[in-house]
Image 1 (cartoon, rainbow, N blue to C red):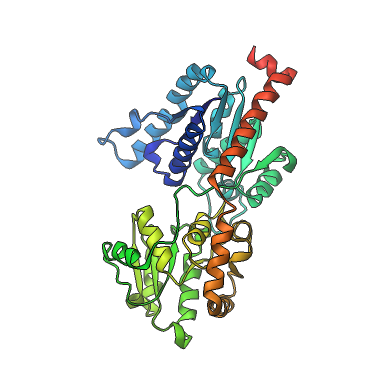
Image 2 (image 1 turned 90 degrees about the vertical axis):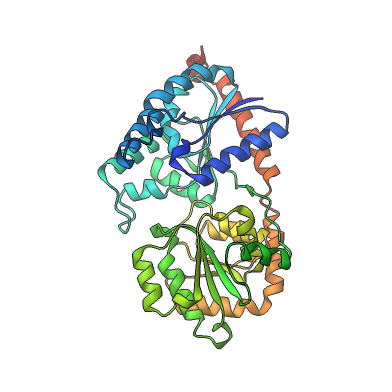
Length: 384
């Protein structure tokens, strides 16, 4: 099968989406498919002479004025086109005469733009941008969501029947496995981290739905138990906001919180492998990669009692109400009395999210899109 993957603009630095596109290309090619991963070339938006604001607008020119011309030229060389990230759904209007699939990873920005998330107001230009994305998704031939939670949100907001939206769970985009303790200690020592004391780990940015303040409050509540007085908190990802830095200082947590940005997959694997557990109190997610990564690395997972975290964590994670901080701390304390059993359940659960299964389902979705355009009179007319 000849497949065109539409990837993301490199300068946007959407690392998870870039990894998703690379994963699809690598795995499809290993199964004998002819695959091209096409990203909008960085032309005007790449110049270093521009300020960040101007680079943003010239990046829009690259993505939405120049790239569609290239896409229209090359699309007929392929049997099916896959837009790997729904934020590029504006390209759908250029693909109506080709079998195509769009993967929707989350509805968080669209929900915010629709006014459903008061704590995350969206600018006028942001609302326009998200309306264009939603319009593209509505026009798409086939849509895949990465979780039931995302499918439910998309169906409600777009009016597309849930039966017309497939769910394909992500497979691991890196071979996370438990790292031997000594190797993990060396890996973390190279980051300047000491591992003589037990610690909890968290990875994620500071956007509202990550609930970073809730995380810090849960950790503070855990430290009220004598058995957790020596436990540290390792924060991986983007630096804390000034509000969070102030909370850490004012709560007396500063000596016990370690922070690292720009960690590698092996750094992350080491951090999961030695940790007492991942604390992941997100209010919303599209999928919840860290839940799966941690379990695959032999790390206990403590997360929110909401989809998609419950979809991904299965019966192997411990769930809590993120608004009940003492309750969350108590649930973590009680669960760690059976840490070894949790780790084994997590490893078994992670096996359900295999990359092989994900690729098989995408190939089936591609075949369906091709068949639909071959048999539907209206779609055949577009192709002629």
